[in-house]
Image (cartoon, rainbow, N blue to C red; front, side, top):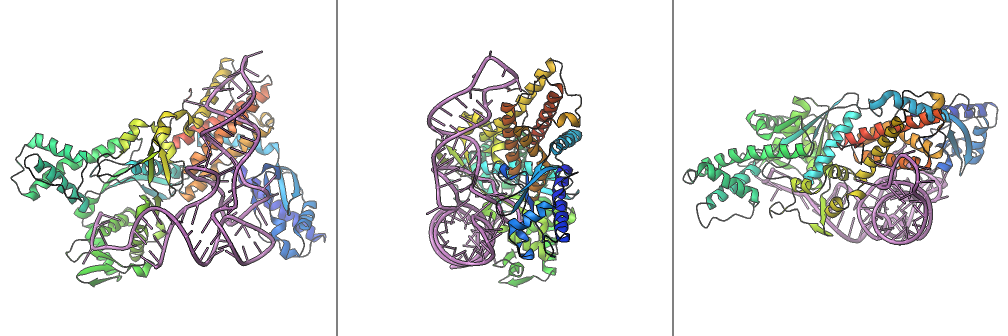
Length: 562
RNA sequence: GCGCUUGUAGCUCAGGUGGAUAGAGCAACUGCCUUCUAAGCAGUGGGUCGGGGGUUCGAGUCCCUCCAAGCGUGCCA
């Protein structure tokens, strides 16, 4: 919270406590301890700027009706030297407070002083966080779900760094295991199809056009010379040709989507460094495994899972979870991140408890891993749902989406909803009716302020500095509402970081735009009174800076003209 | 069967640790530009918060139960 907000809330606690003590002392309230009470912001501004339920929670202790307690407390309240100018009793016994002009002035002074750092917080106290997101299979192009995960993950990382964490972004490349075998098989068959008849693609292979293209390109370079070689050699050559191309395509596509990773972590590196084997050995050492039918099982049921699961198959090959455990061991122990956050599709929800159970068995606090589940995106076109099958070859890829939809809009829309809520993405709306898109609403507020500032500058008025006596002139309802919203920024960033939910940021930005547009329609900045003009200009500058920062957090452009 | 998630206006969704008359946006209708950007603002209509119990001064929020939807429950990843 910003210190002005914090100070105001603390003042109410102190006011109530000392008033209640005074009432007890002069005998109007019985001798009893005042229980913990809450200070909150009422939904309806008619009920004041702040409200407390102190009288209600004290009803039992004082053995009196809440309105009576409220009256006695209220009779002993002294507001001098506080941010409050008025307090009154309402409803079932609420004590409501109204902020004075000084509060609003101090909020703007604070915001102006902090400038582009206003809203930042030390909430995370420098803890290191690794945010892993997208991590799409390198066996093909990214789909629409990766687009959502990318927007959410990238914005979450930015948000956490605003909230005082040290953040790194990571893409985990599944360049080993069965997915790659399947990739190799698919490439192999497509390659052979170029030279032989009757080669069929099995049901569980990749049927996409990208596989065919890779096989053709490979054939153009090498001709048919791999046809006669062993299957193993041929597949190895195909994979080492196609995989790097796919990975660099992923990187390029994500860069276009404005996502830049600190690290591209290869699964194969966990195998080549023997970390997979080592972690398996550690699991066995932990004593939470057993052998059955030739396989090694993990007693996950001892850690809250409903079933045990296999770590090493009877054929000696580890299951997919072992590299995953090794990967998270690497994140939290080898590299020592305080926290790891993964963004996964909700269809992986059964996987989270298993991974956490394994970490617990290794003595790692599972709370250090947060898995954010993301519901799938329903892509809508012409009022109908677009199927997302990767195998049909007709799937909408990330790149197809970005060709159709402005990147600003895509990043904003994907961050409008909480990760764990179903998300319909209407292509027609995003493409054809862009002016209705909420992202433009926010950008418009920014551009509007730039225009006001520009117009005033032409007249020779620009904001050099603003003093408190000028800011005290901001007393209209719209100005106060806008400033209250500015005051809440740091708290919102902290709450969003705590919930690991960047959708709170888009919501805040939209609300900021709304409050600004309302202010704009009710008051003029360009007025005769120099002090008032200066104060309103200062308000505008603060809103503009905040909006620019918020859009920046989303990596969305903040245009000066629209 | 068991487990996870979800259910709030016609549609898409907000509703920190329980609070006052449940809010936005979109869609529909009506007003507001000779003055700083009308991609804006103001107003109207629209609700058994999935159903039913319970906890209490007070429940969309907490507990139980039922209903519906999605997903998971592989020696697949």
